[in-house]
Picture 1 (cartoon, rainbow, N blue to C red):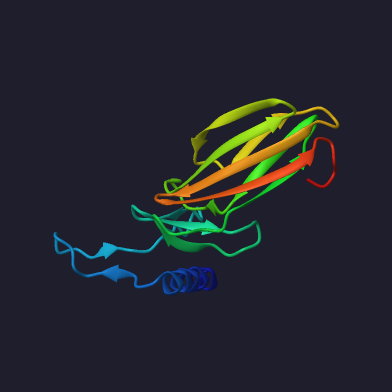
Picture 2: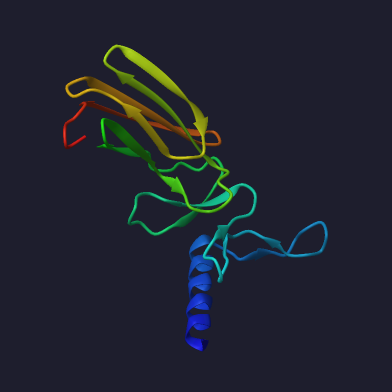
Length: 160
């Protein structure tokens, strides 16, 4: 039990040190204002103050803290999935609630284009037939920062 508490404390200190100063003593109410994201030791949930988030660049990268309007890496991975394709956008917000990163998707299959609404989930799925040409464009925004990633491929190919 003592080792797990020590490990969690070390993890929180490491995240706090990587993200910057832990507190700003100057607040209007005289209470310290939290400037870094926190990990709940019981659930593992990560919560961040307004205008900050923890993100990952890809599935194996370590999370790091960003602020609203900061640039983030923009890329996507599309894989065949039972008669269609599922695309996953990166960077991804791992803190809750998801508040900073938004994704917009435009998918063209053959001659038909579909524009998906903007949201905080980094996934889009769609149907296509073997051999149809596909173009997927993802627009990733973090406040005033916006980046795009586009992929062209043929539906049904193993490497997309």
